[in-house]
Image (cartoon, rainbow, N blue to C red; front, side, top):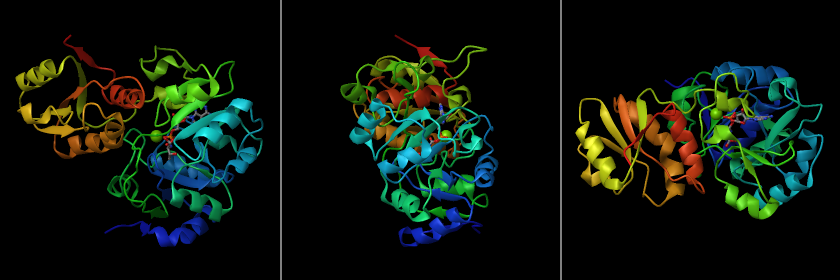
Length: 338
Ligand code: TXA
Ligand code: MG
């Protein structure tokens, strides 16, 4: 029996009422489902951290329903932010900017900055506008699990922990938004996502890539984005990324055939594999791989796989985001055959 109420697309007003009353609503976005509450209500924000089991030092993204509302959330809007907003909002892009005083410290985890995003999902947009406030929301998974991209994932993690779940079907992008910081000397990519570095550089010029995007942080290093330091996107199974040619990958995985061993592969590999496989999509289609990744990670666990050998995504365009999540799921373990 479900404990939490599921609301459909005609019941957004009910969800907005819950937000206004200080409750928690899981909302669909184009990236992943978010666990939302009124961004200006400190008690509601505290409940988000409780429901997820999230460390209090990891700040939340504030979601707005129209570009004009950016000024309610931040204290300064640089030219670069306006350019990015007009090019990519609504969409899978989060900007880190100086925080408005009214945003509670619980949202920013004590930082002087705040992360803001205008999601491109009609239900999220309507929910934000109807609630008459801005909605702070991390991804709607239990802390440490892959972000939810389907209703069934949300139910698995959040049933009984939130006041309502707004059903939006499957999320289109499938990975969390791109996060870019605009508070330093140069724009800095903190997390890759659906809006790519290449696309943003066309609009604002050169972007620095934070080393934590592709590499493991060293002991004692401070994270530009606190979320980077946590073990993230982790299935229960051990994941190892295998670098090599198509043939090398297939040969290696087949040589490891044993109970509990599986493959996180591309469509093209599937017919050649002799172990249970979970395909990310076609080799050349990073967008499909992004959409499928989190679902694949959950399926690997559901199938009882304990050791999964994964293909190494290419690291440009949306592929960089797929690589960033998979390398964390693998705890940075890479097996290089070539
Ligand atoms: O697509 C998304 O971004 C989804 C949907 C729901 O919008 N949300 C999401 O939120 O992924 P979350 O909390 O799972 O990830 C937010 C990331 C974390 O890595 C956090 O550390 C970082 O953004 N972040 C938030 N505020 C920040 C700030 N002020 N400075 C630097 N990083 C920040
Ligand atoms: Mg998250």
